[in-house]
Image (tube, rainbow, N blue to C red; front, top):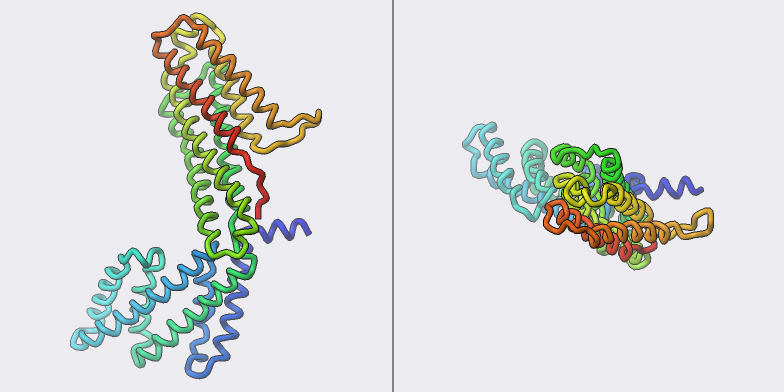
Length: 363
């Protein structure tokens, strides 16, 4: 039972079920229509599939944009064909396609713009004998199917994409924690990568963050016109807060790791006073990575709260680093200032992580 529930939470499974149900319903409705519409019944399932999207808002937008694009293509094909009867067929098609591609640049159509040229060519090849009848049948049945697709998307476990978004957040969280741990390990071994090598290694983190941001945007769109939005409102808000908090921390971590890699403050003037600077800095970075990995309260085997323990360890490590800075006699060294900036960045990251925790119940 649990496995079935988890499977049904997969976005691709939900979309597949919705698309199948919508296509079947659209077909049944279309074949019940009077002639000649029933003869074009296969266009209704096409419209249903087109309109089944990850969110209710996207489904509705896809429905009307696709139908508008189809009507534009039909109208363009008929008009140009009537005005160019004296031209060879090849030139007429070329002109229609060229104009259709121009119409597709209309920003309102967005990703559904390609239907303009498709519909225009289809009108010439299939509907030329009776353009009006074909346009009504094709566009009308596509619209009918799209309306059914939107209705099914709204009623049949309308998606909020929470599970998918949470996975993206978890992936970005793991990448960010690994980013911090790698720097800490390098400090302990004395083998920090060059700035160029670190930039290349940071691309995986940036990809994970981009996917997380995109998933959060989908959740925000999914809340529009969605009957489940109120029920799962707190969960969606939690995802938004988690994503944005993690994004802010990622920016701060990127800055501080760049400073460590480029200026290597543990090898500058301050380290001549305290040979353990690199280890103190590594401990602080490692402790911050553990906080990143522990976003929610969790009970450890000894009964303590793992998150509170991680926060406490991070505060202690940062306190040691801050004390090292305050007690240092080196105040005019480039590495000293870099280490100070790193310390401030870690304090800000810890504050963001401490305040950016909300309980999550994915759906």
